[in-house]
Image (cartoon, rainbow, N blue to C red; front, side, top):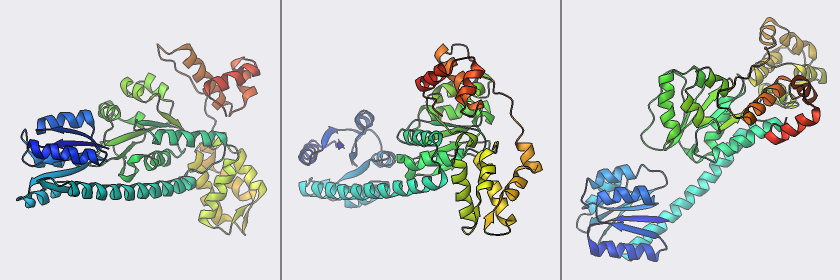
Length: 412
């Protein structure tokens, strides 16, 4: 670990440096708070020792600010006759304090306590992540290749501190995906803030967390400017955005400001529509029904009816259909009559109107490879993963389609 010492007294500064170095720490030492600010930015210490008589500013304010940094432990250094000052420093965020003359045994004791505390925190963090994975298995269940690819993208996004853009049609569990990114990340110990209103909420001054902004394309452009600053420097709260249309199209139409789109274009988690997830429909329907009434089940014909439905409302619509089917059952098995009556009702008919073929908008400056990838991807989605149909629509050979799908990583 890295240790930064700020101590104007040369004798105690040298003693501290020896004691921390003997314990295996990588140590730097400075005399003033001004130098301490510069070294803290350049050196990024894990441990910071601040003398309360250091010049160049207010040491207690320095401690208060430094203690807000995640994964950093701050200790105060006081004169032996002023131990009450060490207590005051702890009230401002210091973990503990040392006193002059500096004792090697005291340094060793503090480092031992710190190691034990960090070990406990690591074990607690491991337990927290395991619980999060268990929740994700329930809230984002699915075994189809498309869904497993989306889950893998969530894992990759969680491992980074970069901002994330979650794309997908309405009803594709974007908030659940954002919560998964948050929970699996190092920020998962902090709050998850859902921005449901037009105005941005007040972000806490301390700690780390995630700011989830759904419907990015409907946010005012001045709000997007404010969000851009978060996306460019997500120190405390990492923004996760969601959009219900193709981000390239939203950007070309002026619904997303260009700098924000550029900051997000390589950090996308795409959630496939339910109609492209195959047998996941069966798995999800059974799971939703078990949550409502574990004594009920669907028969084979009812599951067939669910499987062939278009699901324009995606998982949200499936959950609603299952919820409404449970009280309509005459016995423990729900048959196709109940399911078909719900899928053929006025509400379902309105939702099931076929969408027009998607339009691929091309921004000036896009590479030919990017244009080709997007065109094949959109056509593949329109054909519901049917590769012969995709080849027919694009006037290409089936072999070429297979090669391009592999080249661009568009496997369905």
